Length: 458
Image (cartoon, rainbow, N blue to C red; front, side, top):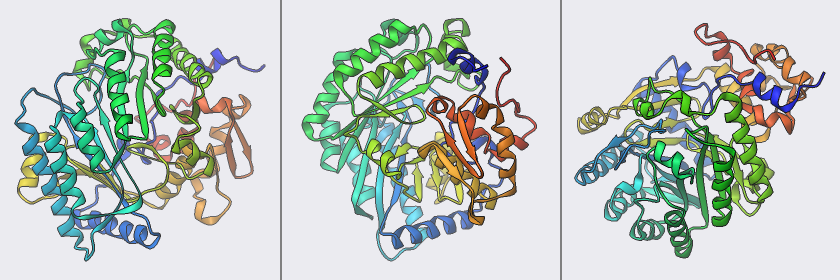
């Protein structure tokens, strides 16, 4: 008997990683030494330059004026305007420390620069100018360089956008989450459609050519009507990209989430139904699903990259192409050299102290072994192309022999097609992409502390 859509949603409703990396952070086991880390970054830069590409830089700005109670990011709530200038100087010092250790004769080639948070526009326009100019002074932009930032519409001013546009920024991501007043009040992020419209229109008038909205489903008091109202507002404003994320309720990790209770949240079935309803509204409005929880108009570069099969996924989300290494600057920022990961100190004072002492402030990371690297490629293929294969010795490790068995249930439910050593995700299976990737996750399978249920029994 073929399971109904409702039965499938219930059956595969199990926690799983978002796979912005493989292995996921929970399974990082071997932090590289500083020398090993610098060596990995240097080798990645050498490879990048040989192919005529550049690196990516992510800068984490942790400050926010107020706490959004749904938030799982590393943030520092403050109204003090004095912290921004000090932080900018610390990040630029960290950038200097990297350049000294890499000891390259030419400026580092740069293909992507992204400001995230927190709230990057917590900084003044002048501080943003100092930060970005200080990075670009010692980098050589590639011809296809893309600069982007995340922004809170409530605090973003025209001078922020004007300054960043002049420095080369063309993509803006706005944190919306939901337009329903009751939901906004519950998560302490009250903003009107008018505020969002003003920032969107200002950015477009300046010349920003890609606007992204971040939306969340599964928030307290959300309903199909609130999702409908939100999507209608989004359709009126017509962003180029949309990220439609699942809310993760972890109050034992993020105490701010205790502002509401589990009773205020939609149940597992209701939560997934909200996503499916929202997705159908987006598709009707002309948006195409390009990967897990991400949508784009046909005119958008991400949609075109998906069709060219050059789409990439990293800690910044989906990007049009593979860019490596990714250097993370700032407190808690994560770096990726493809065969190694590194994360900075997560406590602001500790981060600033170590940089002040002339130390690159890494506190954890992971060196990938051969199996990790190969499985990482398969997970990335599934996340960006909805298929992968392991016919060649370079794409094979013994763990893959068990994938067919692990995917037997999804195969019977027509979520995947398995042919020899090829796995293809069906259109119906895209909803369960996270579950399918879990079958390729050897570290998850071997972790006895992690529940091994791939799906629930209907």
